[in-house]
Image 1 (cartoon, rainbow, N blue to C red):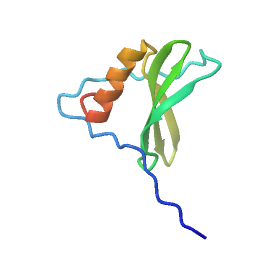
Image 2 (image 1 turned 90 degrees about the horizontal axis):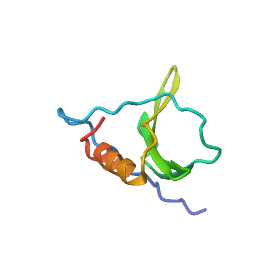
Image 3 (image 1 turned 180 degrees about the vertical axis):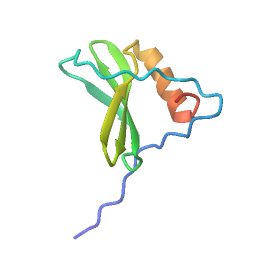
Length: 95
């Protein structure tokens, strides 16, 4: 049997001291179908997903702890603005 290679997604850089704060909100079931366009590696206790639906986009953050998972989302906005937030999170410029 052939062993499959170990695939990892990208990792988020730790927030820089001057990182822009993100207002994380409790998710609201406002869309029937949500597409996850990108995601970070699941090997870390905090994972991010770039989501889109209905012409809007946002970032979903899932924090896993022994006590369970906590899911929060950024406010849905234009795809372009959500892309900027995604890049800032990835580079440690937001957190």
